[in-house]
Length: 369
Image (cartoon, rainbow, N blue to C red):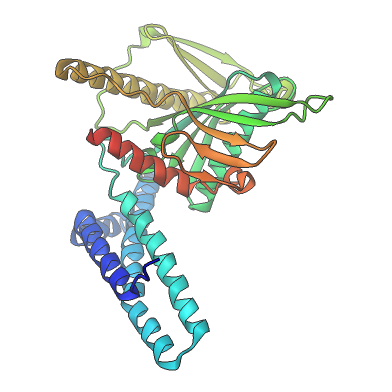
């Protein structure tokens, strides 16, 4: 097997990082930071808490992007010195450390390169995620709850803010559905490949004979609506029901009719929110969810019309996308990108980056064809 010269690999990585810097346009990012810092310093910023949170979140995200790129550049600059010192001193441990840092830099530059692939119309948006239990009875409801925890843990690892709008609990265990928002720039572009059916194979904890059970849950990811979007919702097209919030096992968690369910009659889309304290807040959150669902529907219809004009068939990613096998062996495998991991426990605890990066690259290849 040919021995790869570390100097060649470092040169290649340096070239990749320069390309990434060109795509991200660091000068433009520094200008954005200056503008956002000026907005964040305004004395009346927190008069509108929602806008204030957007400004501070965007500022933090862009500063993080700049620090990430500049940090990688510094590490790449230092790497040849580590190899030189190890070679001069004939120090095997130092050489091993340098090789470990090279491998780490490869992974980190690769992850950053994926970020430059997020150039779709809505990719920079926050993400609205809905999880539904599908075939598999009580196991499927439990599986849906496991997926909810997986995504919330993933967001927590990234220090992303999340807000759960609605959780519909199943009678015996788990959830029928849940809707939550991830409030971070590029959350939609990052997670849109998670859209589809996720399949779990395991020994059922609800089967007293300990039989193997296959369960399915659906994940729906749409971009959050912004003020520039033109989504007209006619009040006459809505049926609004109010009811009491309920917790696990159907138990009441609220003594007032504060939960809100909105049905959009022309499309049949139903959304609900029960996690806020007041009916007014729940209605506002439910309308935000409905707007996002209608925006996604409009986007899909426009894409289908364009594809028809071009004589192309639309590619649907909303089918079974990933298998999580806990018995008789342990593996998580993505059916599109081929990425797999032998530690389902870590994946279900939010260690999703390898899968997410793989599906972003896979989607870009599909879009390029």
